[in-house]
Length: 281
Ligand SMILES: C[S@@+](CC[C@H](N)C(=O)[O-])C[C@H]1O[C@@H](n2cnc3c(N)ncnc32)[C@H](O)[C@@H]1O
Image (cartoon, rainbow, N blue to C red; front, side, top):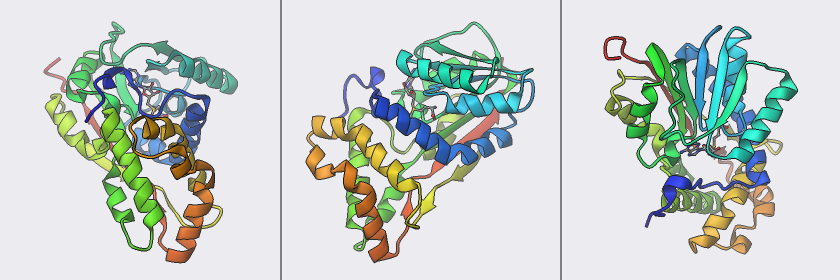
């Protein structure tokens, strides 16, 4: 069963811990996102629209790539996280980044950008094809479109007899995403979404985090991802906070790896990029 109000909900919640988790996630994925943005062609002087900008991490990388002559506009429906994004931009002293509150499915900035980008946002939209078609009106002819999305199909690999804890965590996270209306396989659907939205066939790439060493920073990221979804795990009756026992996840996962010698693979991020048709616009 899917949550009927998924349009206005965000699976991972809006807590301060979730914002911290987004920033931690960004640190881990920063090199991967930088590679995707650069490969897609984001470069000096461009004006970039970042949708579902969250705490501003993709906007910050884009701002560095476009330089002082370029500009970045981030849009998110959560006004609290936009305040954090603005503070972070001030801290690094960029003057070419602005954040606006809005629903990316309906907003129209009345402008045409050189590039439209987003990370982990199409998966939360009930109809990403329609949303993308609408957003393309805000990209100049021949402009760049680049999205980076996760795919949880990899959790099948956890279902190994030697890694029951990872198997359980994988099942819980996929179920909570599905029940909340988020698309847990958006990464591998990017090709379809791009082409159905009328874009040319996109170039695809993927990046993933994998680790087994005892000091791997991914353990706390895995635990904090669960911290953000515990309220929904309980709400849907999938698992209780006691069963999840977030605080002990890093230690228990580490023990499981030590015993099984099988690394943790964080579900991969896929990217797709293309240039909008010049003749159709
Ligand atoms: C997983 S976070 C990703 C944030 C950021 N792109 C990053 O990768 O660090 C998803 C963000 O999308 C925003 N979001 C989800 N649906 C939205 C919508 N319809 N309109 C605007 N923002 C939306 C959420 O508020 C949240 O901040």
